[in-house]
Image (cartoon, rainbow, N blue to C red; front, side, top):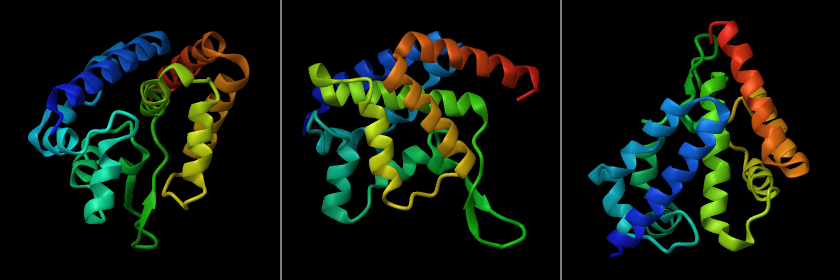
Amino acid sequence: MHPIAHLRTILRHRHLVLRHCIRAGIPVQGLLHDLSKFSPAEFIPGALYWQGNRSPNEAEREKYGYSGAWMHHKGRNRHHFEYWNDINPATKCYEPVQMPTRYLIEMFCDRVAASKIYRGKHYKDSDPLDYFYFGMQHDRPIHPVTAKQLEILLKMLAEQGEDKTFAYIRHIRKEAKRRGE
């Protein structure tokens, strides 16, 4: 069990997400980001399966075939596209719902911070985009508009860097606020 190392990883990740959320114009979301990771349902498995180079949820999933910590986490944190699935009244099936802009932005900040934490000194601005493409190969339940919006931001980061990407994000956040989103 690695509670101190896991706590250190969570705190480093939250600090990076907060810095990114401030740059993106959503500081309160940065302050509230991933607070559920401190709950026993998430912290204990995280400490048990911590490795330092990937999410402990992956190791828990390898052992049991699912991750209870992940299921707890995704159901409480709106910056995960997996949260945004609901029953379509027409089809009566669970389907992805388009994410509101502020949660899309937080998801971007989260993915960049996670890549920086897990890749360490080997991090490149293209890493979050590579991770996105890897995930999309596995038929993940993300709304097509949300997927396209996230891909645009991740491509911009890979090709133009953080400064231009965060400037663009602040612009789309202002537009979303103007629309009442």
